[in-house]
Image (cartoon, rainbow, N blue to C red; front, side):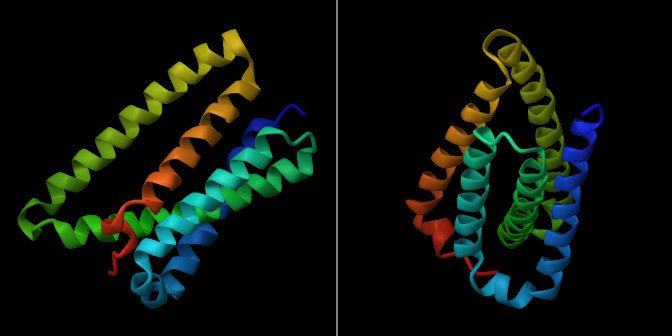
Length: 152
């Protein structure tokens, strides 16, 4: 499958776009259960990543990428709401600029490290590592009272 990587990325973006549309449509409900939404979204991403890691079917991989993009986007929107609630209007622009810079920097470093790691240990090891990290983050969220009780 020559364009498999592009198709997978497109599937994640389509899931993200639909996740964004759902977030707008159900904004009030998501806001009421913000912390729980973050937990469920993180748990979903962790579970779908674990399934993706050991999947051998291309069609299922596309579906899983879509399913990963959907909760990922919803969680991102709730996280941005947390930032907006926590920061003064005067510093909001700087905070979001720093957030974007750090997100881009971490993405670039992750791609670099994942490439090196995959070269030495295989691509599947990257997905196992990602699934472990998502699982750890989900457990951390489950134990974080501040996040769990957040309402927008």
